[in-house]
Image (cartoon, rainbow, N blue to C red):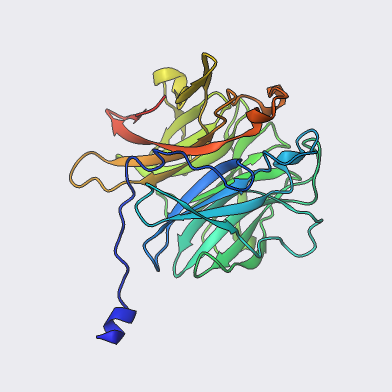
Length: 332
Protein backbone atom coordinates (compact mmCIF):
# COMPACT_ATOMS: atom_id res chain seq x y z
CA UNK A 1 0.00 0.00 0.00
CA UNK A 2 2.70 2.59 0.80
CA UNK A 3 4.36 1.88 -2.55
CA UNK A 4 1.05 2.27 -4.39
CA UNK A 5 0.41 5.56 -2.62
CA UNK A 6 3.88 6.83 -3.49
CA UNK A 7 3.29 6.08 -7.18
CA UNK A 8 -0.30 7.29 -7.27
CA UNK A 9 -1.20 9.76 -9.99
CA UNK A 10 -2.45 13.02 -8.41
CA UNK A 11 -6.11 13.77 -8.80
CA UNK A 12 -6.93 15.93 -11.79
CA UNK A 13 -8.25 19.21 -10.40
CA UNK A 14 -10.42 20.71 -13.13
CA UNK A 15 -9.72 24.27 -14.12
CA UNK A 16 -12.76 26.29 -13.09
CA UNK A 17 -14.65 28.36 -15.67
CA UNK A 18 -14.72 31.12 -13.05
CA UNK A 19 -10.99 30.93 -12.33
CA UNK A 20 -9.56 34.37 -11.58
CA UNK A 21 -13.00 35.66 -10.57
CA UNK A 22 -10.85 37.50 -8.05
CA UNK A 23 -8.11 38.86 -10.32
CA UNK A 24 -4.58 37.77 -9.48
CA UNK A 25 -2.29 40.56 -8.25
CA UNK A 26 1.44 40.16 -7.80
CA UNK A 27 2.16 40.79 -4.09
CA UNK A 28 5.62 42.27 -4.72
CA UNK A 29 5.29 44.80 -7.55
CA UNK A 30 1.58 44.62 -8.45
CA UNK A 31 2.34 44.23 -12.13
CA UNK A 32 1.73 40.66 -13.42
CA UNK A 33 1.54 40.41 -17.21
CA UNK A 34 1.90 37.83 -20.01
CA UNK A 35 0.30 34.91 -18.11
CA UNK A 36 0.75 31.24 -19.02
CA UNK A 37 -1.09 28.48 -17.17
CA UNK A 38 -0.20 24.76 -16.91
CA UNK A 39 -1.20 21.85 -14.67
CA UNK A 40 1.58 20.30 -12.57
CA UNK A 41 1.65 16.61 -13.49
CA UNK A 42 3.11 15.74 -10.06
CA UNK A 43 0.67 17.50 -7.73
CA UNK A 44 -2.42 18.33 -9.79
CA UNK A 45 -1.99 22.02 -8.94
CA UNK A 46 -2.44 24.70 -11.56
CA UNK A 47 0.70 26.80 -12.02
CA UNK A 48 0.66 30.40 -13.26
CA UNK A 49 3.85 31.86 -14.74
CA UNK A 50 4.01 35.56 -15.63
CA UNK A 51 6.24 38.55 -16.28
CA UNK A 52 6.73 40.34 -12.96
CA UNK A 53 6.80 44.01 -13.98
CA UNK A 54 8.10 46.42 -11.36
CA UNK A 55 4.94 48.53 -11.41
CA UNK A 56 5.26 50.04 -7.93
CA UNK A 57 9.03 50.45 -7.66
CA UNK A 58 10.04 54.05 -7.06
CA UNK A 59 12.72 56.00 -8.89
CA UNK A 60 12.35 54.39 -12.33
CA UNK A 61 12.21 56.45 -15.51
CA UNK A 62 10.86 55.74 -18.97
CA UNK A 63 10.06 52.03 -19.32
CA UNK A 64 12.61 50.82 -16.79
CA UNK A 65 9.71 49.35 -14.82
CA UNK A 66 9.07 46.89 -17.69
CA UNK A 67 12.74 45.84 -17.66
CA UNK A 68 14.79 44.07 -15.00
CA UNK A 69 11.85 41.72 -14.60
CA UNK A 70 11.81 38.16 -13.29
CA UNK A 71 9.26 35.46 -13.98
CA UNK A 72 6.76 35.21 -11.15
CA UNK A 73 4.95 32.01 -10.27
CA UNK A 74 1.77 31.25 -8.32
CA UNK A 75 -0.07 27.99 -7.59
CA UNK A 76 -3.70 27.03 -7.17
CA UNK A 77 -4.95 23.82 -5.54
CA UNK A 78 -8.62 24.66 -6.15
CA UNK A 79 -8.86 24.97 -9.92
CA UNK A 80 -7.97 28.64 -10.07
CA UNK A 81 -10.36 30.03 -7.44
CA UNK A 82 -7.41 31.20 -5.32
CA UNK A 83 -3.69 31.61 -5.90
CA UNK A 84 -0.62 31.42 -3.66
CA UNK A 85 2.46 33.37 -4.71
CA UNK A 86 5.61 31.22 -4.90
CA UNK A 87 8.23 33.89 -5.67
CA UNK A 88 10.20 34.15 -8.90
CA UNK A 89 11.62 31.27 -10.90
CA UNK A 90 15.34 30.78 -10.29
CA UNK A 91 17.94 29.74 -12.84
CA UNK A 92 16.42 31.29 -15.97
CA UNK A 93 19.14 33.80 -16.89
CA UNK A 94 21.35 32.41 -19.69
CA UNK A 95 25.11 32.47 -19.17
CA UNK A 96 26.78 35.64 -20.43
CA UNK A 97 23.63 37.79 -20.20
CA UNK A 98 24.17 41.42 -19.18
CA UNK A 99 22.86 41.87 -15.65
CA UNK A 100 20.37 42.73 -14.36
CA UNK A 101 18.60 40.58 -16.94
CA UNK A 102 15.13 41.26 -18.31
CA UNK A 103 12.87 38.21 -18.68
CA UNK A 104 9.56 38.40 -20.51
CA UNK A 105 6.59 36.32 -21.64
CA UNK A 106 7.32 32.63 -21.02
CA UNK A 107 5.51 29.84 -22.81
CA UNK A 108 5.64 26.47 -21.03
CA UNK A 109 4.91 23.30 -22.99
CA UNK A 110 4.88 19.62 -21.99
CA UNK A 111 7.06 17.60 -24.39
CA UNK A 112 7.45 13.93 -23.55
CA UNK A 113 8.57 13.57 -19.94
CA UNK A 114 9.75 17.14 -19.49
CA UNK A 115 8.61 20.73 -19.59
CA UNK A 116 10.15 23.19 -22.03
CA UNK A 117 10.06 26.92 -21.38
CA UNK A 118 10.43 29.31 -24.32
CA UNK A 119 11.47 32.62 -22.78
CA UNK A 120 12.29 36.13 -24.03
CA UNK A 121 15.61 37.43 -22.66
CA UNK A 122 17.11 40.92 -22.86
CA UNK A 123 20.37 42.00 -21.30
CA UNK A 124 20.27 44.90 -18.86
CA UNK A 125 17.66 47.54 -17.99
CA UNK A 126 16.69 50.31 -20.40
CA UNK A 127 14.56 53.43 -20.28
CA UNK A 128 13.33 52.84 -23.86
CA UNK A 129 12.60 49.93 -26.23
CA UNK A 130 16.11 49.64 -27.70
CA UNK A 131 18.53 46.75 -27.43
CA UNK A 132 18.57 43.17 -28.60
CA UNK A 133 16.11 40.50 -27.51
CA UNK A 134 16.06 36.78 -28.15
CA UNK A 135 14.13 33.63 -27.32
CA UNK A 136 15.82 30.86 -25.34
CA UNK A 137 14.79 27.38 -24.22
CA UNK A 138 15.01 25.78 -20.80
CA UNK A 139 13.96 22.32 -19.60
CA UNK A 140 12.50 21.08 -16.32
CA UNK A 141 11.00 17.89 -14.90
CA UNK A 142 9.30 19.56 -11.93
CA UNK A 143 8.40 23.13 -13.06
CA UNK A 144 10.82 24.46 -10.44
CA UNK A 145 14.38 23.61 -11.47
CA UNK A 146 15.30 24.69 -15.00
CA UNK A 147 18.25 23.75 -17.22
CA UNK A 148 19.38 26.14 -19.94
CA UNK A 149 19.29 24.51 -23.40
CA UNK A 150 20.26 27.38 -25.67
CA UNK A 151 18.97 30.24 -27.79
CA UNK A 152 16.76 29.83 -30.84
CA UNK A 153 18.29 31.39 -33.97
CA UNK A 154 15.44 33.35 -35.56
CA UNK A 155 17.62 35.54 -37.78
CA UNK A 156 16.52 38.78 -36.14
CA UNK A 157 18.07 41.06 -33.51
CA UNK A 158 14.82 41.53 -31.57
CA UNK A 159 12.26 38.74 -31.20
CA UNK A 160 9.90 38.30 -28.24
CA UNK A 161 6.70 36.52 -27.09
CA UNK A 162 7.15 32.85 -28.01
CA UNK A 163 4.20 30.47 -28.46
CA UNK A 164 4.65 26.80 -29.35
CA UNK A 165 2.09 24.19 -30.45
CA UNK A 166 1.81 20.94 -32.38
CA UNK A 167 0.15 21.56 -35.73
CA UNK A 168 -2.15 19.48 -37.89
CA UNK A 169 0.71 18.53 -40.22
CA UNK A 170 2.43 16.73 -37.33
CA UNK A 171 5.13 19.37 -36.88
CA UNK A 172 5.72 21.87 -34.09
CA UNK A 173 5.71 25.58 -34.74
CA UNK A 174 7.08 28.50 -32.79
CA UNK A 175 5.27 31.79 -33.37
CA UNK A 176 6.81 35.06 -32.17
CA UNK A 177 6.75 38.82 -32.56
CA UNK A 178 9.59 40.13 -34.71
CA UNK A 179 10.03 43.74 -33.62
CA UNK A 180 12.70 44.30 -36.26
CA UNK A 181 10.23 43.38 -39.00
CA UNK A 182 7.12 45.45 -38.44
CA UNK A 183 6.14 43.92 -35.07
CA UNK A 184 4.25 41.16 -36.89
CA UNK A 185 3.96 37.46 -36.10
CA UNK A 186 6.53 35.16 -37.71
CA UNK A 187 6.95 31.40 -37.38
CA UNK A 188 9.61 28.73 -37.24
CA UNK A 189 9.08 24.98 -37.61
CA UNK A 190 10.69 21.94 -35.98
CA UNK A 191 10.41 18.17 -35.71
CA UNK A 192 12.44 18.20 -32.47
CA UNK A 193 11.10 21.17 -30.47
CA UNK A 194 13.15 20.31 -27.37
CA UNK A 195 16.29 21.20 -29.36
CA UNK A 196 16.87 24.97 -29.80
CA UNK A 197 19.01 24.36 -32.89
CA UNK A 198 16.21 22.49 -34.68
CA UNK A 199 14.02 25.47 -35.51
CA UNK A 200 13.88 26.67 -39.14
CA UNK A 201 12.40 30.09 -39.81
CA UNK A 202 9.41 29.96 -42.16
CA UNK A 203 8.65 33.66 -42.47
CA UNK A 204 5.74 35.96 -41.78
CA UNK A 205 2.46 34.48 -40.49
CA UNK A 206 0.31 37.56 -39.79
CA UNK A 207 1.26 40.70 -41.72
CA UNK A 208 -0.32 44.14 -41.45
CA UNK A 209 -1.27 45.87 -38.24
CA UNK A 210 1.46 45.58 -35.55
CA UNK A 211 0.66 43.23 -32.68
CA UNK A 212 2.27 40.90 -30.14
CA UNK A 213 1.70 37.93 -27.84
CA UNK A 214 0.55 35.15 -30.24
CA UNK A 215 -1.15 32.09 -28.76
CA UNK A 216 -2.29 29.03 -30.75
CA UNK A 217 -4.79 26.42 -29.55
CA UNK A 218 -7.27 23.87 -30.88
CA UNK A 219 -10.99 24.18 -30.14
CA UNK A 220 -14.21 23.11 -31.84
CA UNK A 221 -12.45 21.36 -34.73
CA UNK A 222 -10.28 24.35 -35.69
CA UNK A 223 -6.91 25.80 -34.82
CA UNK A 224 -7.09 29.33 -33.47
CA UNK A 225 -4.57 32.10 -32.94
CA UNK A 226 -5.14 35.16 -30.78
CA UNK A 227 -2.77 38.13 -30.80
CA UNK A 228 -2.68 41.31 -28.75
CA UNK A 229 -3.44 44.37 -30.89
CA UNK A 230 -3.52 46.73 -27.88
CA UNK A 231 -7.24 47.19 -28.54
CA UNK A 232 -8.29 43.63 -27.72
CA UNK A 233 -7.30 40.16 -28.90
CA UNK A 234 -7.45 39.65 -32.67
CA UNK A 235 -8.77 36.19 -33.65
CA UNK A 236 -7.55 34.05 -36.56
CA UNK A 237 -8.56 30.55 -37.66
CA UNK A 238 -6.75 27.80 -39.58
CA UNK A 239 -7.50 24.22 -40.57
CA UNK A 240 -4.08 22.92 -39.53
CA UNK A 241 -2.13 25.83 -37.93
CA UNK A 242 0.56 25.29 -40.57
CA UNK A 243 -0.70 28.31 -42.51
CA UNK A 244 -3.82 29.71 -44.13
CA UNK A 245 -4.77 31.88 -41.16
CA UNK A 246 -8.00 33.85 -41.73
CA UNK A 247 -9.12 36.68 -39.53
CA UNK A 248 -12.50 36.35 -37.85
CA UNK A 249 -14.98 38.87 -39.27
CA UNK A 250 -17.36 39.20 -36.32
CA UNK A 251 -16.70 42.10 -33.95
CA UNK A 252 -13.94 43.53 -36.16
CA UNK A 253 -12.12 40.26 -35.50
CA UNK A 254 -11.60 41.10 -31.82
CA UNK A 255 -12.44 39.64 -28.43
CA UNK A 256 -11.66 41.16 -25.03
CA UNK A 257 -11.99 44.67 -26.43
CA UNK A 258 -13.73 45.87 -23.26
CA UNK A 259 -13.73 43.34 -20.39
CA UNK A 260 -13.33 46.26 -17.96
CA UNK A 261 -13.73 50.03 -18.03
CA UNK A 262 -12.12 52.98 -16.29
CA UNK A 263 -13.45 56.55 -16.26
CA UNK A 264 -15.99 55.54 -18.90
CA UNK A 265 -13.35 54.20 -21.30
CA UNK A 266 -12.77 50.61 -22.35
CA UNK A 267 -9.94 48.64 -20.75
CA UNK A 268 -8.65 46.03 -23.19
CA UNK A 269 -7.53 42.46 -22.51
CA UNK A 270 -3.82 42.05 -23.14
CA UNK A 271 -1.35 39.19 -23.95
CA UNK A 272 -3.29 35.98 -23.33
CA UNK A 273 -2.97 32.24 -22.79
CA UNK A 274 -5.75 29.77 -23.66
CA UNK A 275 -6.33 26.53 -21.72
CA UNK A 276 -8.97 23.87 -22.55
CA UNK A 277 -11.77 23.27 -20.07
CA UNK A 278 -13.44 19.92 -19.42
CA UNK A 279 -16.65 19.91 -21.44
CA UNK A 280 -18.43 17.07 -19.60
CA UNK A 281 -20.43 16.38 -22.73
CA UNK A 282 -21.23 20.05 -23.30
CA UNK A 283 -19.74 22.42 -25.87
CA UNK A 284 -15.98 22.59 -26.29
CA UNK A 285 -14.82 25.46 -24.15
CA UNK A 286 -11.53 26.97 -23.09
CA UNK A 287 -10.36 29.56 -20.59
CA UNK A 288 -8.63 32.62 -22.01
CA UNK A 289 -6.29 33.99 -19.34
CA UNK A 290 -5.17 37.57 -19.88
CA UNK A 291 -4.05 40.72 -18.08
CA UNK A 292 -5.43 44.22 -17.93
CA UNK A 293 -4.35 47.58 -16.53
CA UNK A 294 -7.36 48.36 -14.31
CA UNK A 295 -6.50 52.09 -14.10
CA UNK A 296 -5.61 52.58 -17.76
CA UNK A 297 -7.12 51.54 -21.08
CA UNK A 298 -4.17 49.37 -22.08
CA UNK A 299 -3.40 50.81 -25.50
CA UNK A 300 0.16 51.48 -26.70
CA UNK A 301 2.27 51.82 -23.56
CA UNK A 302 3.82 55.03 -24.86
CA UNK A 303 0.42 56.72 -24.38
CA UNK A 304 0.28 55.82 -20.69
CA UNK A 305 -0.47 58.71 -18.34
CA UNK A 306 2.19 59.64 -15.75
CA UNK A 307 -0.08 58.58 -12.87
CA UNK A 308 1.75 55.66 -11.16
CA UNK A 309 -1.55 53.75 -10.85
CA UNK A 310 -1.63 53.25 -14.61
CA UNK A 311 1.28 50.80 -14.38
CA UNK A 312 -0.65 48.40 -12.16
CA UNK A 313 -1.98 45.22 -13.77
CA UNK A 314 -3.81 42.06 -12.79
CA UNK A 315 -4.62 38.67 -14.34
CA UNK A 316 -8.18 37.76 -15.26
CA UNK A 317 -9.92 35.07 -17.35
CA UNK A 318 -13.02 34.43 -19.45
CA UNK A 319 -14.57 31.45 -21.20
CA UNK A 320 -14.38 31.05 -24.99
CA UNK A 321 -16.23 28.55 -27.16
CA UNK A 322 -16.87 27.96 -30.86
CA UNK A 323 -20.36 28.67 -32.17
CA UNK A 324 -21.04 28.13 -35.89
CA UNK A 325 -17.34 28.50 -36.64
CA UNK A 326 -16.96 31.70 -34.61
CA UNK A 327 -14.84 32.04 -31.48
CA UNK A 328 -17.12 33.63 -28.88
CA UNK A 329 -15.95 35.09 -25.57
CA UNK A 330 -18.01 35.62 -22.41
CA UNK A 331 -16.28 38.92 -21.59
CA UNK A 332 -15.79 42.04 -23.68
